[in-house]
Length: 348
Ligand code: AMP
Ligand code: ZN
Ligand code: ZN
Image (cartoon, rainbow, N blue to C red):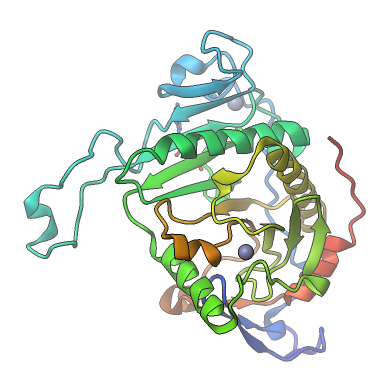
């Protein structure tokens, strides 16, 4: 480790992000230079290791039941993507209804039945093709599949929040190397979603404005598209964390139309390719940070969805687990510069 601040000329700083509602410690003393913070274990999936992969085209019978495919004809063997039930679901789609009285140890609200939906989106029929290899309009199709599934799930009244996420690479939590993402629909609003909601509300109460409509991109900006900007957030929790934010105010991801989804597909592809080039093809997660399904009219003013990408470059330690407060060795403006400076174009 270098002496405090010596290699970047910066002093440590605490920043509060009004969106995540979280304090982050920026500590250059803990850093290698931003460009040194590359993945040590790049995610190199073996393109030939597909013989036993249930997600590969032709192995559909090894999967849990299909919900829908694109194109939509279930008998068309040449599918482009499939949404299926998870074979090992975290929550059970057949458990709707009140829970067993004994479950909550006599304290109302302490426990409930594990009802919910846990689906897998197989993004491509071919084992070796990753999301960042796909064309923007095909990534747009994946995003539209998320939207369609969220709309189906939203008709179930007891579902309160739908989390779309992708794990890429073993250290990002992936157990399957075939390109896929997941949709987990919950009967509760998770605490980090409530904290985000409260943070955005507090900002709105103070300023009368939406925190994400007001984002001052400038030196935090990476790239832009017609409908989105990509930035490193002002108080990024993780090194090289990226947010893709709709320019126009919108509370729910599933409100967006086909044209915007294709536009988002292009910017997402660009961010994944830049991350791969600059950070040595790291394992990563992305999450669609949308609003709870049943929000009040008044809450729509300050809730603004975004897509969060986190390369897995440093582990989470005891301090973070103990406090919920993170230490990030890379200042967001330095990370944005590293990402901005790659000269990459993404087509159609
Ligand atoms: P990950 O662990 O993030 O790579 O996500 C892969 C998901 O696919 C896991 O949640 C598994 O439970 C699920 N899964 C594994 N095999 C199958 C299968 N044959 N059919 C449906 N889902 C599966
Ligand atoms: Zn496969
Ligand atoms: Zn907004």
